[in-house]
Length: 299
Image 1 (tube, one colour):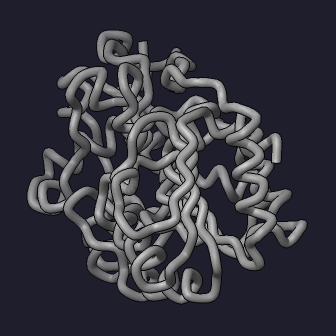
Image 2: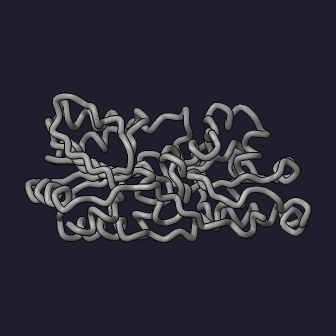
Image 3: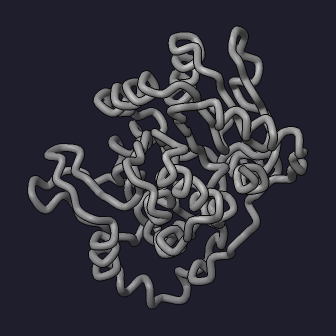
């Protein structure tokens, strides 16, 4: 039943890092005067949130699931109904996740001036919960809801209260409580069709427009102003570390290309499994195939 979401192990099988690898990363960081860090879903798996692509435990590997496309969300009422029904039931689980030792370590790096800039692909706000400041959220976050017409915004916590009030009868109907028990990276779960088809959600209170989570859906575009801020921060740094990202999507990979080809930056990657940058030519790349917390907590 969806009232009892499972806390699963979403960390894929990994190799223990060697002392030599830790030493190489330590030297990498010590040589940097202004270090930039990019994080992906892999940094949050130890907090109980899955990623998409990891072998055996990533969402794509487990059931071939593909997240909702932005055009589909805008085009069909039933698509929005399905999204909000699933998101509504998964919200408390996502909201209750706590930062793990890797998030907290990056906060320490920032406070000790070891890290000058941080960009994340994640929408979970675990960096903020860890106390990290000035985080550039490339794909937005789940903690705000906005109108696609007038840009009016409300907090997701308040929106959850509205959804609860609109669907109280569904929550008390035992026959509608079957479905999945595992969370997805974008914060939703499987539920039965009868629950979805009965689910109610509001339009924008100001203009009657469509409300969406303040995230970048698949098929959506990152705001150009934010893209330029990321480029600007990279231009001001002299080295880059990627933590927990396969770098498969171009919205993040373009910054890797920029760092290597335009800024001539040395690059370090800590990730379980291959990344899109592993075979890049002409770059100074240190790759450590291991769990993030096993590496950076030793620095």
